[in-house]
Length: 449
Image (cartoon, rainbow, N blue to C red; front, top):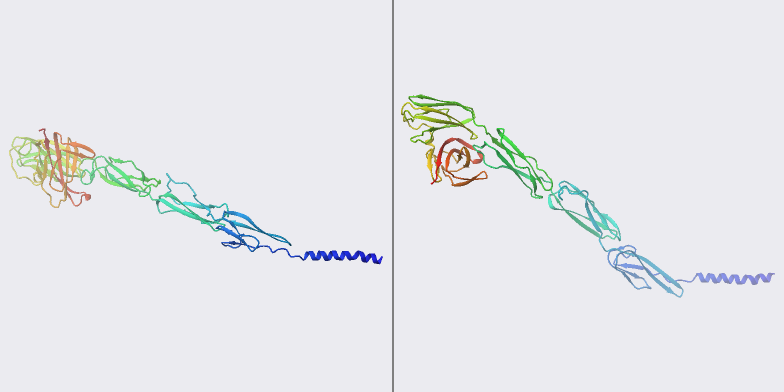
């Protein structure tokens, strides 16, 4: 029994020894990978074509295309066994896409007219977005090509940028209002006047302005007409006010009477306080059967001492206010005797020189009057059949009436008929509207050749 035991035990000991010897065998060394250009750690992101090199056993491998992970392996074998090493190469050489989006749409016709926010986001299908610059708000300066830019960085460190252009105008247009014609007299209007409004806008341009505004009353020393303009970005200007002086009501003239005495014919009248000057036209006139202006001035009475006995005279007294409105009253008186007196102060003959009142002309006449001290210009107004047809501001005491002209947008010609002209002296710059009293008025008659 004992010998069997020994025979059975010996083979068991040899088997263990054989296994022990087998487990002590050395396999091949695993190859190590490095990448270039860096980073040398192949598992990190690379932005250029990357070459994988092995410490032994395999040649280099180059990855040129972007990839979120491409495995590269190297297998080493020897009689003792086989070892395989694998690295996952990641390459992203493309910048990310960048999107810049406004947080709202334009305010009008593609234009923004108030602050607008922008959001910045990116897209990268390989390494993903790591970060983007923060969004912001644009509030100026005004520009037809305002620009907002931003950037994003992907996981590989590539930076992408973008910008967006848009029109921006937050400034309202400037507005100007102008009357369609000059004042009628002394800075005053006495009939309908229209104010036109126009704007200027250096960025988006003017889109629309208030329609022309006409004024025909009530009378006011400072009537105010307002208008606005809007630009293409929908900015409205503040109302622009244009002030003008308006008076279409003639002064009151009443109780015109004549007293006949040995001294002549004494005329008196009562006028409202707004009456500033008066003229008296007599028919027959001075040394002519045609009408003559025998008085022009501020006084409210006048003695006509140039008379022919027994002649019946027709007098027309006209009162003018500062706005050039006139009110006329007529009366008749007969001279008791012939009276010849020097020209009284205020007689128009001392101011108006030609043509004579009632002159008949077949060619455009030259209007002449005496110069006024310190006057810098004159205002001449021409009427035909009671309607003003021309006004002009000469700087010399003479003026030729043209054969044709334009006035307030209408064309006129010197056609046959009776014309009446008035003259005032102006002082200082025309913009000051400083006028003296009426220098006088006369008429002339245009006849055919």
